[in-house]
Amino acid sequence: MTNAETHRTTPLRERLSKIASPIHALCGALRRLCRCVPAEEKNISKFDVELDSLRKQADTLLKNGKVAGILALRREGDEALPHIFASAKELKNWTPGPKWPLAKICWRMLKGWPPGKPLGVICRTCDSRALEEHLKIHQFTEDDLVRLLLPCDETQAELCACMQPAPDRVSETRPISPELRAVAEAADPAGFWSEHLQRCIKCYGCRNACPACICPECRLEDPAFVPTLTAPPNPLVWHLCRALHVADTCVSCGACQDACPSGIPLLAIHHALADQLRTSAAYQAGTRQPSPLYTAAKEEGPAGMPAPEWKSCPGACTRENT
Image 1: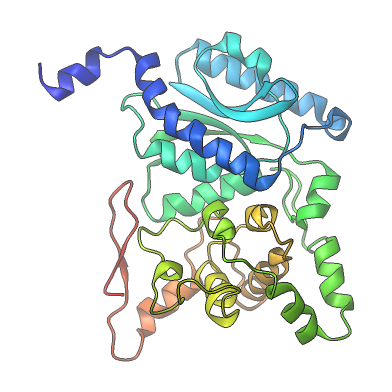
Image 2: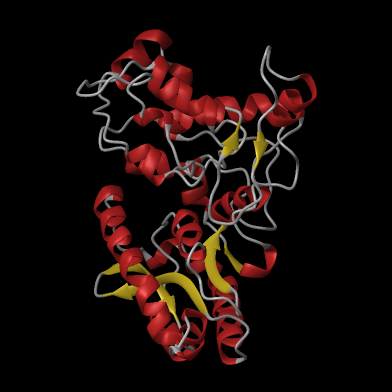
């Protein structure tokens, strides 16, 4: 029997199980890293109508066989973990919180997803915007994914300084988060950042949690850029270079800041770059707009170098001529 025939005859649940095993291992690591806590129902009670609608949409998709499974959070005791819901009966254990970065898990799953039916995902708008960035660089196709959008409440939106906490709620100005307020009120900005960045232990938590960091080879692991066995790293090489690298793809989801065990206000750095792109180029990551940074590089070209080109191959994101 050929590999293709074996793949067709293997039960869907068994194939999903093989894919889910490494995903569950990753989820366990993320849970410990992000210090997730059980969701407080009082924070989401005002969205009961939206949550009920989401549950019904997911139920319909699974019952009608429109998706092979749905990636979402499942209540396990007093915790919640990412899970592939393969049947409508399982949805009774679905929970909307706590906030969990699902975009990168979704991206990893789609690299080995069985052909035929798309993957469904119940995610927040920031995750959906991150997945939109993945679509731009051909990591998967529109037919591979069905997104059901979960709204964030006002408390969560303020913590992330989010400008689009729900599909129908878009703000023209960024809310002031505690981190942004601390930066704005700092009497000595240079001293403020020096104090915070000196706490970095170079754990790679920000890079690993970030849905925009999906390059197959990371400059932060290149000894020519970042010396090994040293901490804290040079902030210009580490934090600012990483921020500039994802400036046009960062969707302000806050996964980097949530993952940081040293409590560095990383969102303040990313918000500053995102706000600059929005005001100077009318650009916002997570939309169908082409990146102004990539467009400018392609039109003008770096001095002495050809413009980079994306390879259009699902599951492998590389830049040529870099």
